[in-house]
Length: 160
Image 1 (cartoon, rainbow, N blue to C red):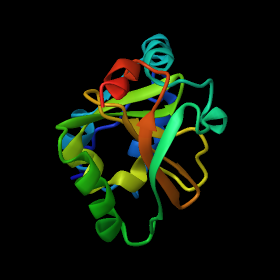
Image 2: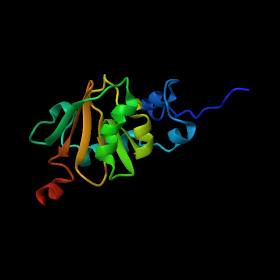
Image 3: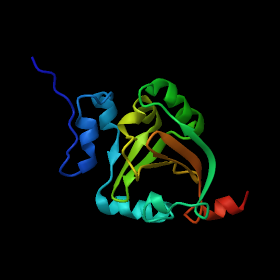
Image 4: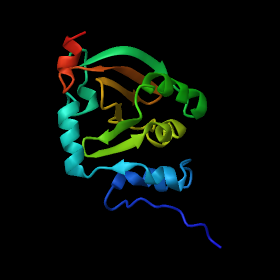
């Protein structure tokens, strides 16, 4: 008897190949808990929350860096502690692979398999929590944690 596995529709959500891959650590139930947004919905969220057309445009004018660290893609459990301590206030995250590929992800699902979301080769992936300006993005194995400025959260940052 063959085990039936949950497959995300790659025609509708091209980024879903990551979760259909055999090396994806997520269970079928965890995969089903991820809500993928279509391109139009994704672009709208990006335009509201990300103060740049792409992450290469982030600078000290639109991102306040709090921490820069190197994480190991080969020791995902140890590296998951970085995310767990910075995201403890949230029950889910918005994960952007680009301006047109976004998913709403339960925090525990992200923590279990963060390396199925971030890849070392990604240049435009960023994680946001919907209730504050905190963001995490990466370049190769270097991760940047800080506040987005000039975005939806601008008024919140001024109040500090």
